[in-house]
Each structure stands twice: as structure tokens, then as C-alpha cells.
Image (tube, rainbow, N blue to C red; front, side):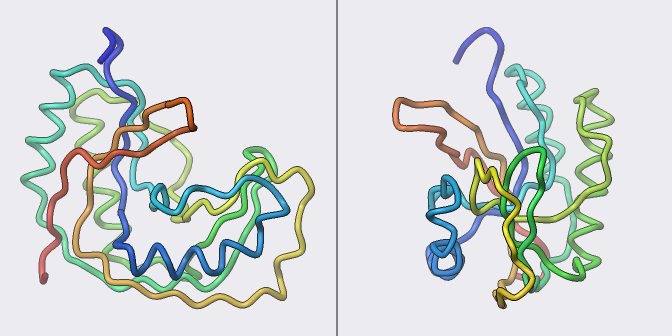
Length: 176
């Protein structure tokens, strides 16, 4: 670890079965840009940036106290954002339990003085990066459902082979 701490984020991670399902849809974009590694697929809940050891430990303590319900999420459409040049997978209607979890996490980060994006939360799973031309996605069908039974703290680590996301700790969601 450097003196600057670790680059961290809170997210929903996926088991191998869900990763494979997402990957099957993701592969159709292989010629459009750079596919996100199957093992790196996740749905960010809160990006935290560089955190020092003390802030990280405080965050972990607070996350252990969260009482949030598990939920089913259905991702039913693809989208494209021009500025980050990404193709993503997203739910048409985010589950209320997801939005409640994100609100709780934002309250924690605010209480700990951790800066976060101020844009409204838009749940999505990044599938492909460096997509330079806006793709036509309207006619592409997708339907992936999963049950979120935990959330986790991840570290983003740059390596010679690219970025790797490492799960550091996970916490269960209620009803699981």
C-alpha cells in the first residue's frame, strides 16, 4: 500500500453463474471496444476514491452495522454513455431496496467525510469501455435477473495486465 491509501468502492459483486450470464450478453460488444473482464463485473454502489487505513477501517465498522434488505434485480436494457465511452447493462426500474442501500451508504460516506460523486445514482454494470462510436442498442434484447444477498468493499488495483478489482470484505443483506 502506498501512503495515499487504496482506491476503493462499494459494490454488488456477482457469483460465477451471474458473471457467465452477463458475459454471454457482453461478448456481442467485443469488436466495439474493450470488454470488462468477467471477474471484474460488478454494480457500483458508491465510489470512494483513495482512502487511508483509518478511513477504511471506520468505513468497514459502519458497513457492519447496516441492516438492509436483500432484493431481486432484473437488468433489461443496454445503454451507452458518451463521455466515459461505455456500454452498460441496467435495470429499467431499480428495486427500492437497492436505492435504500445506496442512500444508507451515502449517509455513511458523508458522516466519515469521504467525498463522493454528487450526481444521482444510476445503477449499471459496465460491460465495455473505449466505445468511440455511439452504438445502436435499442433492438438488442437482454433479461438477466439476480438476487443481491450481500454488498462488498472492493479495491481497484492497477497491474501489468490491467485493472483488477479485489473484494476485501463483504456484508450480508437481510433475508438471506
